[in-house]
Length: 216
Image 1 (cartoon, one colour):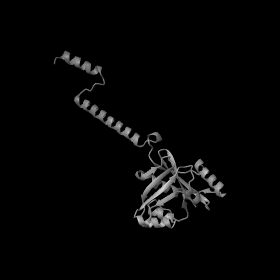
Image 2 (spheres, one colour; image 1 turned 30 degrees about the horizontal axis):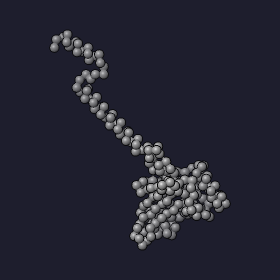
Image 3 (cartoon, one colour; image 1 turned 90 degrees about the horizontal axis):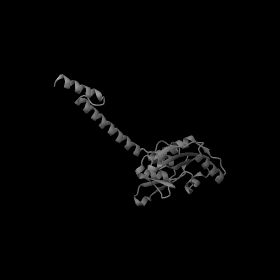
Image 4 (tube, helix red, strand yellow; image 1 turned 120 degrees about the horizontal axis):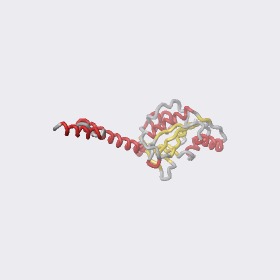
């Protein structure tokens, strides 16, 4: 290659600053492009699986309550009207309710809702000891046995239905039936009678809140 041709090649390379100068630089750019493409695909997948928009199927999660929320106020008004008792919001009971909500939301494969989304069913297994505690209405011991957390004294009752199979059926299934927030099923109304404290948490599934209510 003579000096004139070499000079032309240098001019062409300098004229396009985006053009790789050698094979090593070209391979490096290709690798960066592949890496960016993989990151983009991963980001899109993450967006799908963690979407918070109910229209694309939000993940199920527990949620704490707030003493000043409209939901809690509605509960207090409901039972003041029903039993003429001023119920107070209790932080300790609400934390226990949150432990239950966390247990429910932690196993989404065993959860389902009815057609109108007014109830959430959490189906699990309970050994004989847990079932015996439930039969005795020793809910604190039963929930601890089910690995929900530490509940301490048995000084509360759940405001939702808990269904267990008959002992003779050899079926160890247990079903928690959580009502949609803003509804007051018979199990909740019965549990509230004679009580003065309430604790509240929620399980949110597909944008709908289901209430975990405890009375003390």
